[in-house]
Length: 107
Image 1 (cartoon, rainbow, N blue to C red):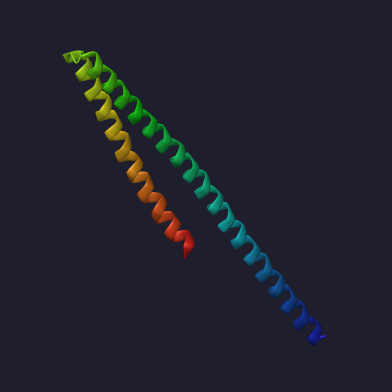
Image 2: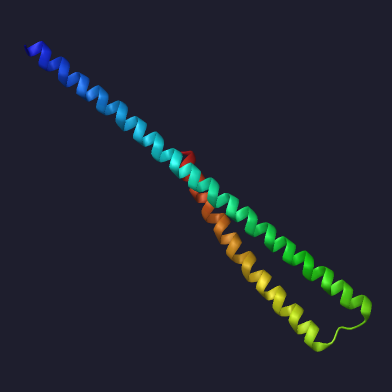
């Protein structure tokens, strides 16, 4: 009888440890999936920022070739570059957070 109780307790402990390990693996997998989704969003935002910079550069070159660099166009271009700079700063902070999360997930 005592052997049966000990065997039952050992079985319960074993099943509990297996379930706990499986749950921790699922949790880690969920964190990795969320990290991957955040990384994909970052890549899209970075690509959009790069395209905005390219469009502004092309616009500036076109204005320069036309010889029309009036004050309003220059101000619009400067405002646009300011917005791009602010977006790049936000993206840089997001990248830093993503790097920290990756380091935490790797450990």
